[in-house]
Image (tube, rainbow, N blue to C red):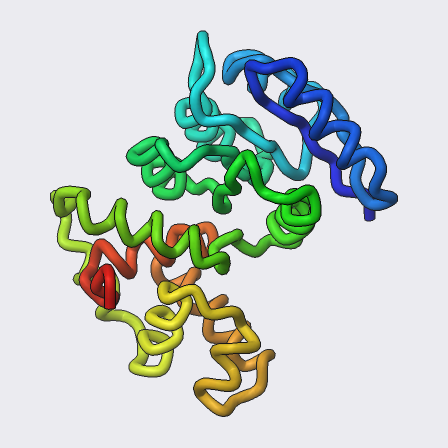
Length: 224
C-alpha cells in the first residue's frame, strides 16, 4: 500500500528536497505540502494523508498547534493522520508537548535521507519513532525539566499487570519489540500483545505517549 505524505515547512527548498527524496520511493507518494500549520490543516483535509511531516517553528500557526488539531479533530472528522515532527537540537518544550499531544515521534532535520525514509515507513505502520539514542536523550531531558502534572499519572499505572509494567519500562528505555522479547525471553508476538493491552488500558495512542507517561509517572527516572 502506498503511504500518502504531506510535508509542512516554511522553507520552500526544504519541502522540495524532502518531496523529491520521498517521491523517489515506490511505496511513498507526497500528495501535498504546506508552508505553515494553518495551510497544513487545509491540505490534510483535502488529501487525507497517512503521515504528516511537520516542522515545529512556523508562522501563522506553529507545528505544535497544527499537530494538536490534526490529532484531536472536531466532531465528525474521522481522518487522523500520523504526525512526525521535524526539529533541531535547540527545540525543547515544543517537541515534548507534541509528543504529549499524540505525535508519533520526531526526527532531526539534518538526519540522513535513509533515516527520513525509514521514519515515514515506521510511523505509517503505526509505530513510534523513539528508538534512536538521540530521541531517548531528548525525551529524558524534557521529562527531567518539566513540572509534575496536576493529576498524578502514577495512578494510571495501577491497572497494569507486573509484566505489562515491565514492558512499559523497557519501551520507555528505547528498546525495540525484538530487544524486549530477548530481554524477557518471550516471543516478539507476545511483546506486541502486551503493548496493545498497555495502550488500551492507559488510553494512549501509541508508544510515544507511553514513553511520556512512563517518565511522568516516575516509572523511569531520567538518566538511569
